[in-house]
Amino acid sequence: MTSQIPDPEAGFALAPPFLATSSLIGRLSLCEARLQSDARWPWICLIPRRAGLVEVGELSVTDRAQLIEEAVACGAAVRAIGEATGFIVEKLNIGALGNVTPQLHVHVVGRRPGDPAWAGPVWGAGRAEPYSAAGEAAALAAARASLGL
Image (tube, rainbow, N blue to C red; front, side, top):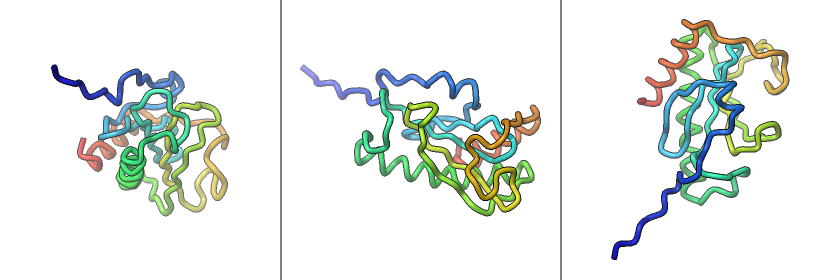
């Protein structure tokens, strides 16, 4: 008799708001990486593919470490998106809020002085501005290249 290793992704489903507000960049080891549909900032959202999580502390120690590594990699991808779209990133903001969408997710946002919400938070700052088709394609390509996807 062989014992089966439980699938850590069993039961994982992406919360519907992510489908409405972002586009898939790709799957990393732990997270689904998504481009936030707001052209005002280079912005990636990381969603760990684990069911029912709300807080970072609910991840295993190994998964928490992996989440940090993926956030760092996405920081480089956010800078690449910025270069591809003409937004030079001077500061990275990384945050796990979850006040609106409770499913555990981490935002990696490129910022610079003079951006539409500087120096405050991007959340709730005006209305999202959708990417043009060409702008979204450039942002996705830059992120995927940076992440090796």
